[in-house]
Amino acid sequence: MTVASGSVCTMSLDGFNLGITQPVTAQNSVISTMQLTETGQRATKRKNSGNGSMNYNARVSSLLQSVDANSSFNSYGSIDTRNVKGDTIPTDLLTNPDIDEDEFVAKLETIENNDGSSATGGSTVPPSEAEGNVRAGYESVAVHMAISKIKVLLESDITELHLENELADIRHLLESSDASNGYHKEALLAILEIAEVLNEPEVAERIDFEGSLFDYQSILPKALDFAFNDEAEIVLSEAKGTTDDIAELLFESANRLINASEKLSKAMPSESYILPYEELEGFTYQDSLAVQAAALQAANTISVMSAYQLGDDKYYIPQSHKVDELPAYESWYDYELQRYIVQPVILKNFESEYIQLTTDPVDFLNSNSTLLSLRSDNKYLNLAKQALTDSVPVMQAIDLERFMSAEEAEEFTKILTSLDNHLKSEDGDATPFVLDSEDGTYYANLHAFYDNNTGIDRNSFSITINGYSCRDDLGAYDLDTSKLLSYPLCPHDESILNDWGNIDYRKTQEVGYYFNENLGTHVYQDIAAVPARDNTEFTPIYDRINRVIWCDEDEAGNKVSCEF
Image (tube, rainbow, N blue to C red):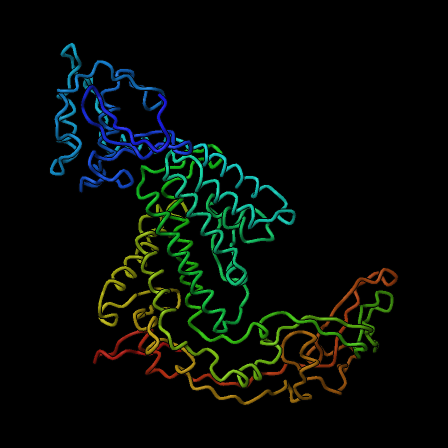
């Protein structure tokens, strides 16, 4: 049949109106029952009967599959409805909102063929099953092409690809090509949106995936892999700072992750939804839940990060340090003499990497008076709480035994139940989140945690900065020496030998080693230095901390503080 582009077609079965199509175009030329809408409704909007799986499209699918003389629908061939007598189809079959699925099936059994025989032949397909048959079996050329491109990404040397361009091409393909089985495309678009967000540098530097089957240098293919790999999980990456600008970028990224998770939920809302493409080995509803949970977990993590003032990235990024001549000692075991040999050396052009935060933590605290304080705008914690709240029903719907043992699943279900009850309660103290661990039982009021006025931050502790002290009172803290190993050190001039003429390792720090082929042994390089202790004291202010976390209640009902 040939129709003009933009035409809206009315579909019928021997005079019985099945509904109207979306506008037919070159890109939207394949028509399925999932695209039909009730006559009189806008062609772009599905009408739901108000009865769960009994939406309009499910009813149409059920009708056609039940009266198919070939019973061929489940093998995705053409159906034969030529003998169906249209005036025997109940007029309200597709539109009556007051009937349940059993009543609908009973009405199907009254439909006759032209010869008076039963059109269903005593075999009906309920709406819930019929919708699943359509969704599971009807594939889109555009989605096939997109998945093929994704597979190329996963199997390619990503250092030779322009990943953002590849992602843009896939997105364009899904958004502009045929509209067949649109939920497949919407699901993939949501997954790609999650991948795109996690590839943003500000996000990729802060969270990563573990358990991935692939060894990638970019988080983008890792995110795509996550969608199809049960072993992958999101974890924190290296610590990073959060300036106001970075916090805003993380906030926007978290918003996008939450929205993408919602899109994926709408695209695949139940077990009957599956992406049946061989390239994916079947991407199921359960797989979609895992991706949603991961996206929401990532959104919660970066939202919490953005809420705290963690200083500039310069304190966290590795920096290079070079010493032209470094006084040191080399030592090795002489097998002929059967003793250790120690001799002073000068290490030329010694290079190291250090992180400012770990090298001089005292200066880090002194230079950042607002460090670890919450930002004044509560939007960051509000969004983090939303991501956590949204994730609970997603995780409750996951078949946990796919990812853990039955015992672990049972324990995790208890945690989810406690978390769900807590988040739904208005009084977080009366219905706390309870977490049992090997160390004991903890009680938390997450409503207080996600509130700027009561959350835990720098103001929950009394901080006293007392500088450094050196082990055994040897030497004094020195920044340049500390840069050699990226932690506080005290160089000294004391002898580094013990009473037997060997190195006293309490007085030295190893900076390197190598294998000496002439000696046939390893040679170790040490400097005369001892660790410096950061004497900063963090004293908990329990009146503040107990608003968020506590470990028990006394007989009077007062919270008992946890020991930190």
